[in-house]
Image 1 (cartoon, rainbow, N blue to C red):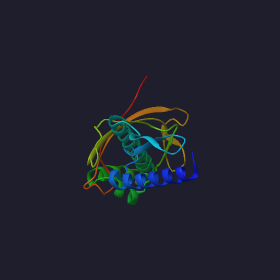
Image 2 (image 1 turned 30 degrees about the horizontal axis):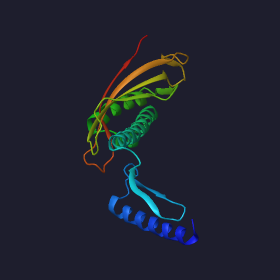
Image 3 (image 1 turned 30 degrees about the vertical axis):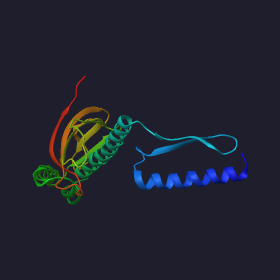
Image 4 (image 1 turned 180 degrees about the horizontal axis):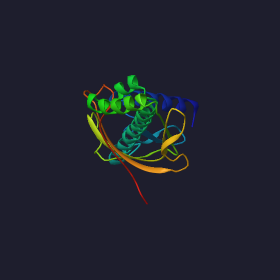
Length: 199
């Protein structure tokens, strides 16, 4: 290909790509790519648009990306709520829960303080997260199942264990529901159910 041919081809491609970006937008999953076939003299033999991903595959990829994002958010919320409850950090808990759920946590924390008891909880591994609500953009309510392995004990003011076993791992399954008033607000915990899993 001659230098002139290369230059002309480059100019054509640049102009077409610029035009495509203005028309197609910036969705990385649905961007087009330009296929250009030319001969040795720079004459264009074929020029057509190809999907980077087929439409259905792009939609599946987008759903997967959204699910991964939600899972990360829920994982962070789980750790934040558990940590705040164990530490008795009611100020932080109030920002993570609805008034109804907060009142339950507050009562338990106050009982521990009155009796001068200390709660210790260690997560042995990352919780397994199962979202049971169909995911969609701008959703305002989501229910999720957290399955975790924990070491959970309660100590008196002298540091003696009065409940639980510091060397025994307990498998717990917690079903929590989170809600948000508007798309741009944070998720808050509105319902909790938990039980030990045996076997």
